[in-house]
Image 1 (tube, rainbow, N blue to C red):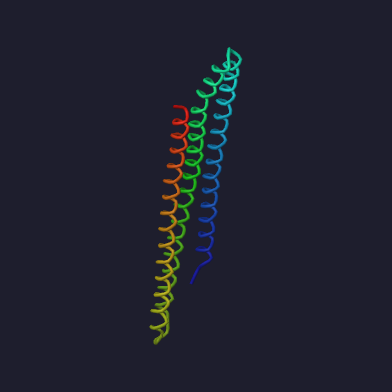
Image 2: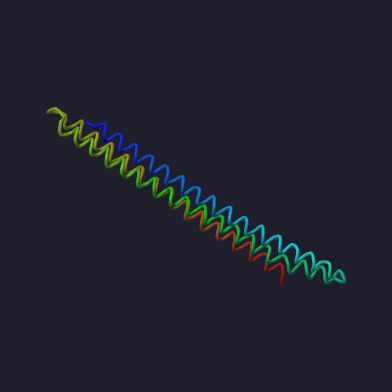
Amino acid sequence: MITAEEIVNTHKSNVDTILGLSGKALEGVEMLIELNLQVAKSALAEAAANAKAALSVKDAQELLALQSSLLQPAAEKAAAYSRSVYEIAASTGAEVSRVAEAQAAEAQANFMAMVDAAVKNAPAGSENAVALLKSAIAAANNAVESAQKTAKQAAEVAEANFKAVSTTAVRATKSKKA
């Protein structure tokens, strides 16, 4: 039987978890804001330098050379920015996943403890029902574990694809310049 103290402790634990996740989410937002501020400052400084360089151009050929020289660094910076945003999102998501998995494991352990307590108090002749219940729980646990593994694999594939696309974009810009 669940006591009032166990319920209160569970709620306290849930509140702590929510506060911790909220803190992690805010850390991710802070990191994104800081990244965006750095990018904005850098872009402003580069725009000023590029404007000065463009104003010092003497002919069309020099202007084309200047434009070409600015194209690759811009693509590389865009790719670096995308990687940084992705890394911030991935690290924040990984932390949320870690906490969610820990909470799920704890809930599963608590549920199994309740099932075991109920089994001890089950009337005689209910062994088949108990075995069926345990089998259903094991099947559900296996399904959840399989879904978690699949989600992790999908995230790894998405990360690899993101890196490949980013690298290809930078290489394409380099080859156009050459």
